Image: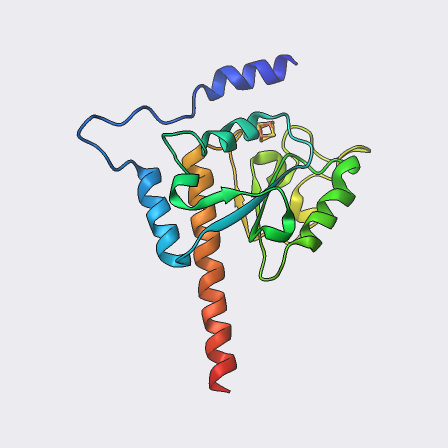
Length: 182
Ligand code: SF4
């Protein structure tokens, strides 16, 4: 418990300060425009908390506030994995959530993307691996991108989403070129 309190004190506030009145284009807005430029349509995200302390969830929730305005830019969280393009996983994978996480992944239509958000999802973080924890998400699922931080800031999460979509889109273009030219 003391470890967690010390970590909270060390980490401080991650949310970006309000922009100046004459700065109407914060970094997050530029990232969102890039994302839509690549996709050209809405991006649907299914989030799974695989055993997090809820710190990463607070930063993910911030993406939907009026400042980051994710939904306003056409990027939204969905309840069903069958409607999702991207799986966002937080926390170390607890043994209790392992099967649910695998089923959620299987239910997402191809081509699917997976992002591990936070140090716990990256490598197990302060929870590590134990009788109750499988550690990082990559121990269970193929991960396209990892956003480190405890917790990562909303802008870092947004940047991770953008980089993942960009890389997947480039890969699909290459495979389509190969398919159509052969
Ligand atoms: S990375 Fe930090 S904030 Fe996120 S779930 Fe782990 S301990 Fe909590």
